[in-house]
Image (cartoon, rainbow, N blue to C red):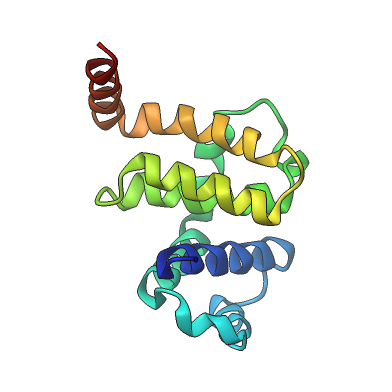
Length: 151
């Protein structure tokens, strides 16, 4: 069963995808289209709106941030993977209350749902590197916890 937060992220990715394909489309119109889906009522509306509107507003900063962590040209990244990466980058940089492993896991699962066969591997690799830079202390704490649990 999908959580309200997962649904919010899925709808946000769909909205970001639509915006990437039609950048002239206002976020409010994209939101209106997505709200027509019967399952939208089960999504965390506040999270959805924060993700969609912030990614669109900050895409000029989020895009180059994400692009530092992969070798592909931006236009060679599938729009689904790009949408997921932009959303996750926004969460990693602007929503510190959400643990980075949750953000990465959600991004991987959403990419498995909407993306190509191995797209989730690409997304995971990019986000692991991004998290290590923008959430260095949290990543270090998580690694030391894992090492302590194995020891």
